[in-house]
Amino acid sequence: MSGDNTVKLIAFVLRCAAAATIAYLLASAIGLLHPLWTCIFALVGSQDSESEIFTTIGGRVAGTIIGVIVAVAVGAAMHLLGLNIVWQIAVAVAICATIAWGRPAIQLCIWTPPIIFLTASPTESIISAGFYRGCEVILGVLIGGLFLIAADKCLAWGHRTRPRHYKKS
Image (cartoon, helix red, strand yellow):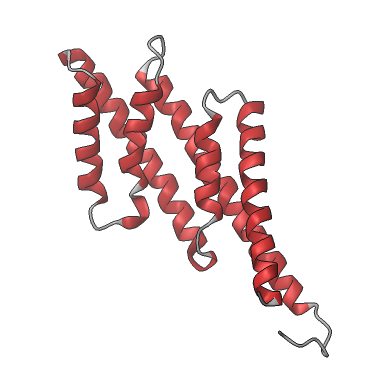
């Protein structure tokens, strides 16, 4: 493994470990009920391409918000109609898939309704579940993106500060 690849490997490992750890600690500290989602989306975000990170973060946040709105609306309507979680998932995912078709940046909206429906407790309103799962996912997306940007800046800084006589392997 060349020196540059070793540095990239170390940066990747540290970035993933730090993103998951900080995501868990922050989500727990602010009282989010399912810090798992913050960790997962911090890891997803920390593995993205540096070149399009701002577009990716924006799309994931927008997709999450769309998914929350659809899940809450569908969940409330289906509850009034007496339809169970299977119908709620099917209808909400179908709506989100229609919205996300041809828009890969917001495809996270497809994941969001099942996350909300399957983690809501029986005593929790669909609005509360949607709000908290949305916060957990968005926080993870932002943390993962920040770690990716920071790692990219550190690697770029490291390349600029090498002595002139430094030779790549």
